[in-house]
Length: 601
Image 1: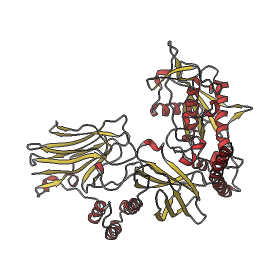
Image 2: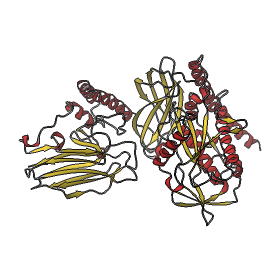
Image 3: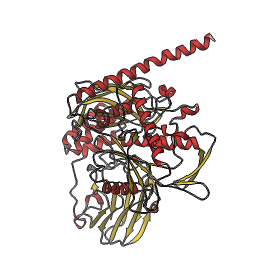
Image 4: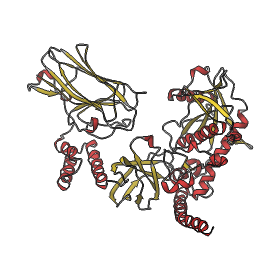
């Protein structure tokens, strides 16, 4: 018995410093936020609940009592987690009518079969909500939890759910929208009914769970999507945090309130609590809320040994940055597996943070700077970790110089970019980014294309000649490099299909086409087709080459780091057309590249 007691005591001794550190960090950060807002006018900002249902359906049975219990339970979860982390007097404010959650009812303009899960339907519902509640609710400047009564009980007692269920993109300190499904069987009173089977269909998949598990997943999903609506990203609990349960913004929707049936439940990470403590709903302040933040990160250094990685630097901004959250995010996984650490940014802008858990393979190091007005700014770097989870520090240093050089390239400071590249290559000749640095040394700026009939050489890159026609459905095409617009979410500056740098190439978002008048003067066409690296794992493109309207080549679906080498006989072709078409589940992230597209006589 004494051995068990001693072991338990040792566990408590080990856990106490971590808990104390989290509490002291949280309270120090909260003091910074409150000092920033001291003296600012107090607002009456509330999380508002909207109930949407289609024209040919009634709201789900007993919705008022159920929604009231559910929303108050989610509020209790958030408030309890704020207190556990160490925040003082921090609560999620709800719009209430007496003791009940206020629910704004919106009857859709169309029948149930005109609505569904996809983002287009969420936007459609949001437009109808804005129209019907004009003057009462402002979706552009408020925080809304939208519950959708889009659930039908089928003859076989299977419930069909076809509701949007996500936080709408663009959530920040100015606005936040999230959608969740309602069903007559959703009720906190059902969270402990583990022996009652429940069948439902979502995304055209029949599923069977216990009634308790169904409520855990869907009410937990509501709490999770609300987090997105309040600008919380995905994150994963650290190994040292597993005793707390599952991070809400990881897979915590699958364990929400599981403690009620003797299992580990969900919790809020310090990273999520930090982003919430400066949110206008908690500060009740509009101080600089609508200002656009700008950051400059400098003096960044990376050091460490074993699994530990320490990042130091300095951040400057027009809106006070009080905290830095570091994410070690493995490639793929939609950020669900992003480990997270939080530290204070000192008043002079300096910061230091240590990460000590990484997944083997390709990773991103993201630094999110939290501003006292509720906004965040992010910088990111790339590195690899070995099979032991030990990070490659040199890869981070390489990533840092790449970022510095690309910033100068995007700003048109080509001479400065070339100088940086030359100096780094001389000091680190074995660097893995040597190919990138050599491209920088030879890059002279945007190419001015010439007319193809004026070409006198025996070969020429099509990115250096005038196209007879260019068509793109999104953004604008560029040549030999990427000149990013604000909406372009691809990565890098030079074209890099399949991870291979190309100094010449055509770049555009699919669907796109480039047409060239060859006049039967050229014999071969070669290229390497693929996608520019970016944040969309499911992007896929098919590359097509046509000669005088006849299809000469069609690739398989190309995604990720795949490439399609192309070598075609184009003898006798008058008009050559290069086409990239989206082939994935949607059109997001289809940044297509024709790498080194060359014609030869």
